[in-house]
Image 1 (cartoon, helix red, strand yellow):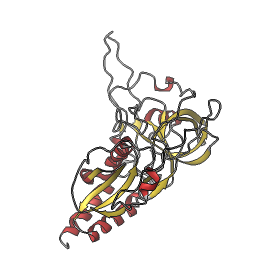
Image 2 (cartoon, helix red, strand yellow):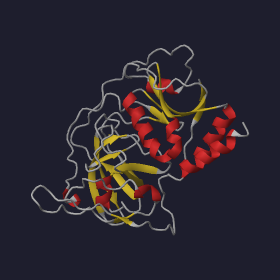
Image 3 (cartoon, helix red, strand yellow):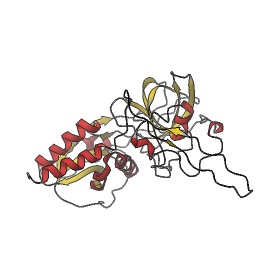
Length: 322
C-alpha cells in the first residue's frame, strides 16, 4: 500500500496538468497556433485558419482542425424550430456525486456564468443526443436544459451574441454554465482565453412542448442499493454487456440510464485525466450505465485518489466496490 500511494499520486499530478484552464491572472501566453492553407481542386489556396493565441496548455491541442471553413464568421446561427425532445437525454443523471434533473419542457431560462468550449478532440464523437459533435456547427452542451433546445449566448465583455442548439450534456466543472462548440466560442471572442463570463437565455421556437410521462422505474435489482439508480432508471435502454469486468474499488463519476450519455461523459473526462484516462470504464448493471475510474487496490487508495481529483479538478467521486 505504501509503495502504491506514490505511484497513484504521480499519476494524478500528471492528470492535473491537463485540466481545462480557468481564468487566472498573469498566465503566460502560449505561441500562436495556425493551420496552414491547402490548395483547393480549382487551384486557389484555401483561406488560412485563424491565428489564435491560447492562454492555457490544454487549449493548444484542442483548437481548429485541418478542415477549417473558409469563413468562420459567415457560419449562420442555429435557427430555432419545433423538435421532439429526446427520449433518454432528458432523464435525471448523476456526475461526480452531483445529481442533475434536466428540464422536461421548453420554458424561459436565463442565467449568467462561465462559458467554455470544446473542439477537435471531440469532433465526430457522439453527443448525448446521439448526434455526432460538429465543432464547426452552432451547438452547445448544458447540464440541465432540454435536449434539443435553443439559447442565445452573449458575451457582455464585447457585446457579441450567438444562437446555438443544445444537443449535449456538460460542462461538469464547478462554476461553469455552458460548453460551446469551437465556432460558437470563436464568434463570441473567447477562443484564446478558453472561457469567459457569458449570459445564457432560452429562445423558444413556439409553444411549449412537454415530454411524455416517463415510464415507471424498474424494480431494484438484487444487491443494487445505489440511490442513483432511482434517478436514472426510468426510460433506460436495454442493458448492454459490461465493458470491463475488473474487480476492486472504483471511483464512480457518473450514472446514466442511457449508454450514449455514459460514453459521452467518458470521452469528455478522458481529456482531463491524462494518463489516468486508461482507467475509465463504463460498467453496465441492469438498466444503468456507470462511468467509473479504477480499479484501486483498496478503499484507502481509492479515497486518496478521489481526494486529489476533488482538489485538482473539482470532481466529487463516490467510492464503490465490485
